[in-house]
Amino acid sequence: MINSTNVSSQIVQSGQNVVFDSNPIKTNCSVKHSDGSGLFSIRKPGLYNIFFQANVLATVAAQDVQLALEISGEAIGSALAHDTLTAVDDYRSISIMTVVRICECGDTPVVVTVGNVADTDVTLENASITIERIG
Image 1 (cartoon, helix red, strand yellow):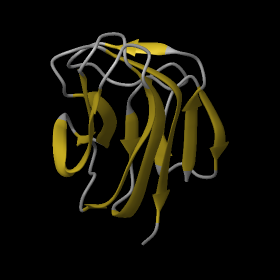
Image 2: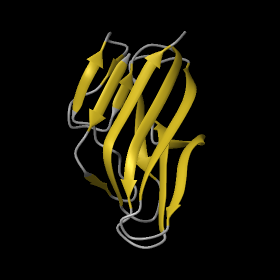
Image 3: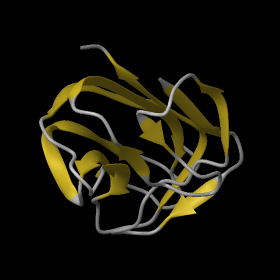
């Protein structure tokens, strides 16, 4: 299991990944992450529970926020957080939770990210992700 966080405010540009700067909990080597990265490498086949949470802040009126869990660069359709923040300085909490099956890792690990799939930049703070092998 790994839990990674980034308490600081960060601007995630369209098409880019959320970055996590610390790993307060890391219990084994099935998931690898380097501080300051948005990439999580799953190195062992199995079922994984993935939970992401962050606070989002609107910098423009009617801001469309879309963040998705991605496996090897592809968004998981059922793992999308989508909200429209009405006014500047609107502040919301969003979360995504899903279970994924990793069948075979081989020599190349499977990469998990949280990507900004909207057309606009998103301002986040208190971002947290937990990836736990459950079977």
